Image 1: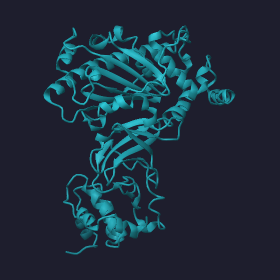
Image 2: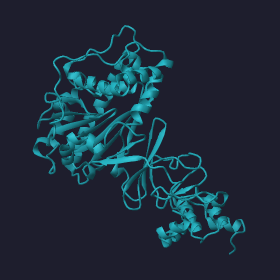
Image 3: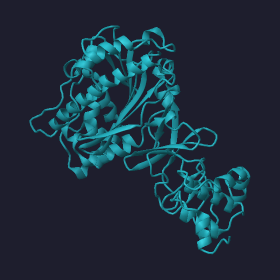
Length: 76
Length: 400
């Protein structure tokens, strides 16, 4: 299975919802990162943002958007 | 139950010896046992109800191998080696848990879909394109039998679990074990003996009258063992209503009630299936239990057990299960002491080995199964540690 097959196989809306899981939910850090990996494979996310989600994944209370803003990857 | 192919008679003449003492404390033999017995024979990892929902997982470690049992997106139970294809880390570090989306390796962050395929490597742009199947989690051989999830780490001599357990298929199906749910998490305890000493004690009921007053009170007069034949054994006992002199037994026999699904001859039965080399599935009207033992070293063993109850249990059944558990807990503690006494004898120079009763024929047949896999068990005097493997190979070749 390659990246484009992955994108067809899974429900992209479900993964977008996973990416937006509420900060602090147990296990949500891994869920957001797993969703980010999917959306990266589908071309919906940059590798810089994927890396932000990776850095946050072990910390359910870490907001990836806050880290991205701190790193200058996102602006308010 | 179809027993036409199982000869369970104790022969008039048989060799009443056990295994030689050196077999219980030889590191070289233990290495062979890990490879030829534990990794190549079916092992119970958990029950389907231990992974109840999509994304539920349960891990299972054995002799240096690591497995993960997982409920995939289509609700199917799958098993994989719990080894990241990147650097070999555990993909799942906890004993059990739930993931909503995918498995994330805690080392570098490789991500795997619930069907085991690779969703993506961490920092994907640092790798060439990776095939999602080729770099997916390695599948682990897995079979579900009456709700119990069996895995096997390497090819081995046993047939499928269904075929192996076929002598008991009708009886086992009556218990609807696949519908049961866990009472608690899987229990483990280390004990300071060789794993075979645990099995030697469990493979005979000769000691019950002496060592297990509660079991004896419950069903001692009716208990009997069927030996290991083609890798499986069976023990059976029935309790009597309103019997028992001990508090737990007396009340258990009062509260235990016939289960609707069970045929009449099993209404008051406690049944045990031994599965070579190291496991038992036990059924009572209230529960299905598995227990097993794994070597940690020549003189340390991990005991592991899971208990499952009827999903629609009422208060009376719950009370009966509590009382059955009291009887079992007492029995386990008594057995642990017996295994220590049995095991320590194996290092005493004056001990000349077992001399078994007809009521311990199950011990002999288990040992015979062991000898078939590893002929070096037939050597009476301890070979040098550096010669065990070679000697085993030589004996295996000459037997062919």
